[in-house]
Amino acid sequence: MIYKDMSNSEYHAHPAISSSAVKTVAKSTIAHWLGQERKETPAMALGSAVHSLALEPHKKEVVRGPETRRGNAWKDACAEAKTFNPDAIVLPEAEFDKAQAIANAARSNPFMAEYLADEQSKIEMSVILTDPDCDMELRTRPDLYHPDGTIIDLKTTIDASPNGFSKQSLNLAYHIQAFHYCRVLELEGLRVNRFVFVAVETSAPYATCTHVVSTGLMQLGGLDWERAMEQMLKYEETGEITTNWPEMNELFLPSWMNNDI
Image 1 (spheres, rainbow, N blue to C red):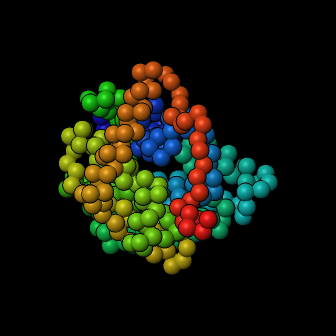
Image 2: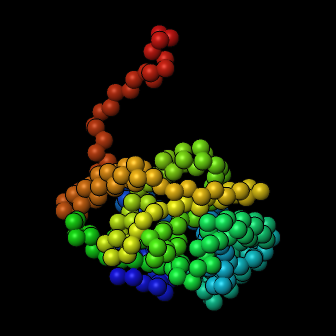
Image 3: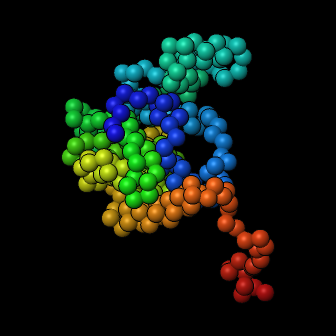
């Protein structure tokens, strides 16, 4: 089912399995997924602010707070902002200005600008459904979806270059995210032709680069997604929380040292 007006907090509170959950299992274990604690960090707040300012500036969710996060002035600013909007993001003055600059750069990316200007584009659309193959409830919330079959995900990064972002995408399992989004939207009956990351750097000059997920990388994402889902399905059936690590592991010399001994 498609939810057009679901708030960000409502979406993240929903128990359906997200791409972040699948990525955690794929990169770590079931135990790490179930035991993880979500702590809001300044970096996460900056990333969320950039998304809101770039994709939905009309909502005015991002608030320019006091100079620092210390003292009663900060607490009062946060309390006041949350009173008007539970999804409000309060940033210190300098961080707000930086988030705005990054968001402006993202909106100026030619590919992103074209789709943001298109009235058919759906921003922050939530999709929640039951996967018929594994009988598990899944959810996804693409930054932007267009009926021509394009999914766009905005990423803040240190290095948006082709080489730098390629490494980051594998390290952070973005290929699994891409597959998850595509699968859920296709199960909903929506057309999906390509998944595109628009990466924007978090340091001046806030350079951007557009990255299309290749067929091969999407296939790898599907394989990794299926392996993770198998583990999650096993947990649903047995309730067993495990790392699947051996009871005793032997440590070996790294390969690069073997010739020196």
